[in-house]
Length: 305
Ligand code: RIB
Image (tube, rainbow, N blue to C red; front, top):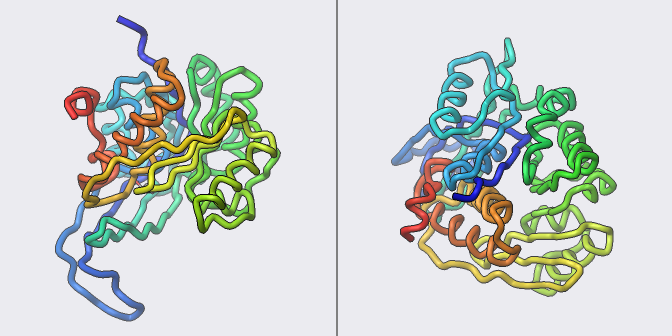
């Protein structure tokens, strides 16, 4: 049997508090909603769990509160086989939460309280150095302090470990010189517009913005386009990865399913396009079910699809 790929994630862990609404309320309005759920989320944790469910060995570098939610997050990671030796607990701090409203089209609004995620530091990345250095890929998002993300990008460059930067949620203060340290940059359209300052209204706009990132020195750009698939941009050219059409119930965490599964398959030896095609199918399957991590298929479930 071949060795499973090893993925490191330096990122957030949240508990998602999700209300499914028939329509979004307006300011000052009280409405009844048909359904409520609490589940595990956070962009970092979601990407870690997607990769782990698909059979990767995953080491998570994260922070949770010394509260009940934090204990639950750790139990969830352990149950899914995610290595939690570098998930710290912060006294007098809450575990990160995301309050989410999902409409009948599966679209969402998300309000984040960073909590302990805000305490993940450069020193935590260094402390996990031996384990991160043994990874095939390190995944990064922007729900932890930017300096921590930069530390992980610098670490990857210094130690020869490839990194995937998913610049989500969109932030205007990213340092382009640090972004260039990433081996892969994987924005959605909004994030691409913010990274480049260019419009992304049409397919041509998106292609031009992706090319701008390449021209600025980024090796590989993967633009996620939701129900329209994705765009792979490398110095060899642009390639559209077509979507897999499904009926969306809840799109929360779909981007994370995409990145986590891409990482697992790419680090597992598939070529870029093949890994992206698989990630597209995996993310599409996730939107047919409610929640973030709980909508992610296991390897056996995914192979049956
Ligand atoms: O990307 C989806 C995630 O964003 C949710 O799980 C929520 O926790 C927020 O971080």
